[in-house]
Image (cartoon, rainbow, N blue to C red; front, top):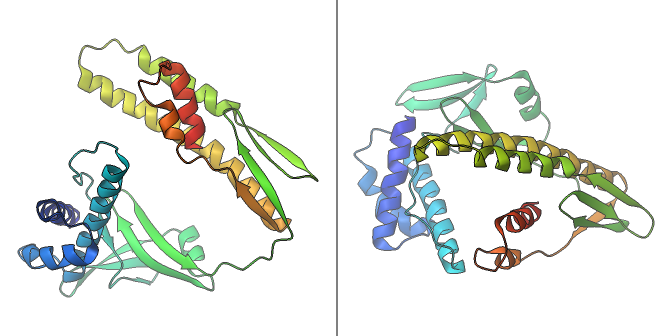
Length: 264
């Protein structure tokens, strides 16, 4: 089923590229009947078209901004749906064929989360080794009594106002990124494909480690702001990409550091 869904997404993308269609309505009219030969429930076809429309819309947006893009293609086998699933007996039941359902056991933490009042499971994403649930919950409205500004820098995060200022040390993220770049640059293999595979593993490890540190800092900022009823004000960094593009007379080291600031 995962492979069938992936092929339906790619078929919809191909149809959208041929007909220059990126909206969900137009792509559905063009693709739905052409997906009839796939052995899949109809609601999975609609979800595949919706995913293809999102990919095409993202490509169109990148082209409009002037960024070069490759021909989009769904590589990962997955199944995404917001129809005809339910949580029952400690698991997620999804249809796989007419009259047949697959039950996937859920962890205790997941069951505790989706059983809370006001929480509703809207959709799921299933891969070979992962199940993700998209939930909706009602967020309480907070009347803010003051504001707090956030200044993002390369090695620290500063949050404060006229009454209080807090600093969060992020120098460890810079050390992790620099170490990863130095390790990848030291590779001496002749096969570029092997270098790319090994480098991607180090890149994923760097992303996971830095992401954890950044998530911890930003979560603390948000929790403190909620407790003190403060509105968070962020600086405007739109257009910063144009300052550090290749060919601006900057070295790779300088450009890489400023790109890390932008990603935060």
